[in-house]
Image 1 (cartoon, rainbow, N blue to C red):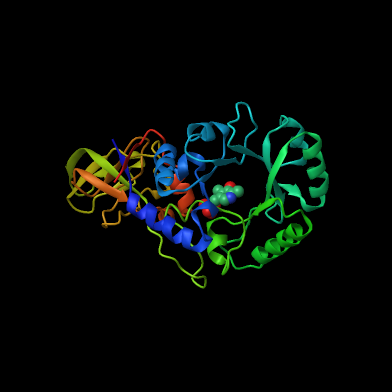
Image 2 (spheres, rainbow, N blue to C red):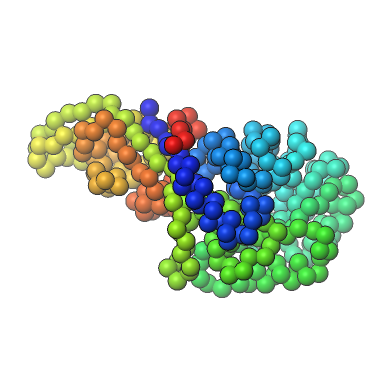
Length: 330
Ligand SMILES: *Cc1c(COP(=O)(O)O)cnc(C)c1O
């Protein structure tokens, strides 16, 4: 079985760095959506609780249910209530959705300041607040999400300005939050009520070189076990499509980590492990071959480096890792 190890010391180190930037543990809402970015929802929620994190963010109500007892505040980003817990808060992403929420539901209103994805228009905020009142919902906070917190193109400042203007004219009894990881660490002087932190906690935040850099440590490593080994002669080939052929005799082993486990197939033929072990041929559904005969192979310990091979971002590498993989806290 391929196995994931979760490095507790690295996770706590990242949380230390985040607490320092945010000002306190209470200002951190740890984003645990999508199986805690592939790390394992229960594992990461339990560690976060042990550290003293009190707030969590998830996508679904079912995820909130699974961690209901661990946090006092759980923000659900993309779901409507069916069996709400009393510590659940639900996001309103669209003004027409307000009527779907039963009276007494605690909600947060997401506003679109320039991301152009979810959230109600800035012009509809007053109408939305009215509708929320009429529906008998309890409005806890107004929040927004940045499209360019990790990019230098002016959009970050524009969205920030729009959100600041909105804050100024709304009652200060409401809470406000806008920062993901990159935005929190872009701020010199963070002063909002809360930041929604995902990737930095998992140790894979990447921001442009001109931004302040912080020393996060990746939490997740992935190991695969050997299924079989063979000696191949010159011109022998490996895997579907015979895309890798030996230039001279070589030792090739097959390992039990494939695209059905979350190894992106675009890593085929050119991936190298952190120890410089090269992949041989295409990644299959349940396995992949490497020029190695080690019993257990470290596939990666930093999703950012895999992302470069797959031409994607660490978020996709991590969330691709399937729930069936073994996870162990070390
Ligand atoms: C996923 C998500 C975050 C976390 O973003 P990171 O870049 O991982 O810190 C924050 N807010 C919202 C609304 C999200 O969907």
